[in-house]
Length: 330
Ligand code: AMP
Image (tube, rainbow, N blue to C red; front, side):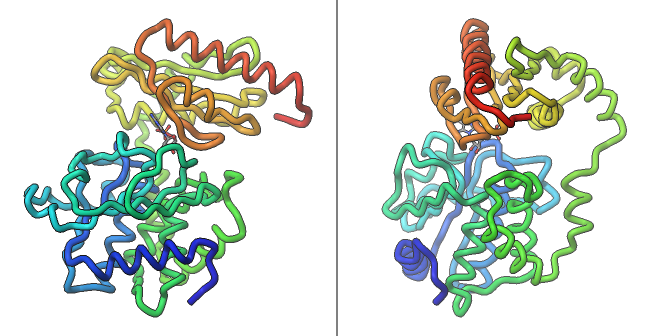
């Protein structure tokens, strides 16, 4: 068995997997590459390793962007969940889990890489230094490689989350261990040309839409970059919620804008806030506005213009304070 810091809880999770005939895997709402990749990757590994067990993904929402990885499973009847083990990946809290039917399962296990604010489940394996949950699934397979089988398909799912959650191995969460585990996935023969084409090519029409949105980006006194898309804007520009939320990327390379925020109106009139930063920690700011996440990548929700403006002004003050007390930022 390989040496891993949390091998005791990892072994206990494997024992639970052995104990159950039915395992359902869930993830957070509005899934990203890590949520989709880790759930599909774990499912594939468990199907290969325990072909006699029923192993299903049970989620209520879906990502268009990651549809190229394939469909998820249809909902099991409620009564079938009573004897199931539920493994929840990449969700810091139970509120953010895509399907609320985890409560019908006999037992819950949490596997996550967000800072632990709300422990849940009979077993919880949380490593917030990990760049992604996919990295944890790769480690899980590596730790028990005598028993857990992997193939190119599973490795492709896992590599998807490794690439996307680390910003193509660019964010400072990328460690030597991330690259070691990524190398193990690559050794399964992933078609990276095809994967990167699926992840990063854009329709030609999106360039003019992005140009218009780029013109609407504003910068606060101390350098916070932000954009706002209302439901009317989205309709006019023909953007789905998911596409609209990707506009956050338009602000990631502005010099001096160490914090950038996208305000995307939800269908219910509340506004989703996507927060990103370099050097500065923005998690506490997100926490104050019904959110959370990582040091430099968080999410929040605001329920009025007043709250939106308060968040913006707090972000501006935070950046002003950072710039006045630190050197060497860009
Ligand atoms: P997003 O901007 O939605 O990609 O979120 C960035 C990070 O913050 C992800 O790791 C999310 O899991 C986390 N996050 C987003 N929204 C929330 C929220 N309302 N509460 C807690 N964590 C969140």
